[in-house]
Image (cartoon, rainbow, N blue to C red; front, side, top):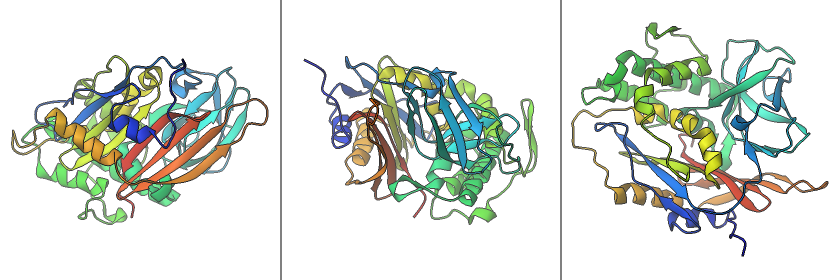
Length: 366
């Protein structure tokens, strides 16, 4: 008997009820004073993958289209290749971009995908190549995606990049103190301006720290290179971020803070999650590394973390079709859906009627 597949209509319920092989792991905090924890999601299944992920191959060629909102991708491999929304493509002599929706690239095909620039001051060079550069930070996505998982305009993305970079600079400036009980209050207030609290300032009023040097890279007050700043931030805190280890059969995770569940992401199979695990943890770095002012105030019991995730999974989501490919030459059917409920938005990707990727995040966009 073949294993039961999961469609968009059942995936949230299956995860919440820990059915169809899904199971919640034990909540983990990067250190005892962290204001956040990660809840691993694992799955045991005999299903076989119908695709590989972009980080697993070097046979997807990516070129600059010459326009700011498009890049060209060619799949020269023999596999279907899944490309995650928010994937950063680091430009070689051209500005780096991030794609706005997920895609499945069929063997031998070439497509143009919608992107946003994440390095405003760098120029465009038509035909220049890109390489895989990780995933956009959660704080950027929270500021960019609106209902229906609809991306905002380029100006909004640039503002989100500047605010996120400012937070990374601030936390890097404080070093490990940013994740310790005595962390300065101003670091926490600055972070709240990124995730969209009622107190956040207008985009152009985001506080900008003075220049500082962390490791080998100099940060400047007008630095808008998201990829460079993000990499340096992760290197500075690698000892802490690396504690979010990869578990056997892990297919995803949820991030829970003192205010509730911030994001849920998973694949259908563990091999796919393994390919992006490090980048998925890195994208949540500023949330994971926030510290508290008093010890023993924030304590997660396993059931509290699980309940926070189940609450988000159980929301009454409205579903909208973002993209559909109907087979015409033997290739599989692809459908991508947007999710919207209360403060949360998300994206579901189906390949031949089976959900292969899900992401849900709390949005700061009205």
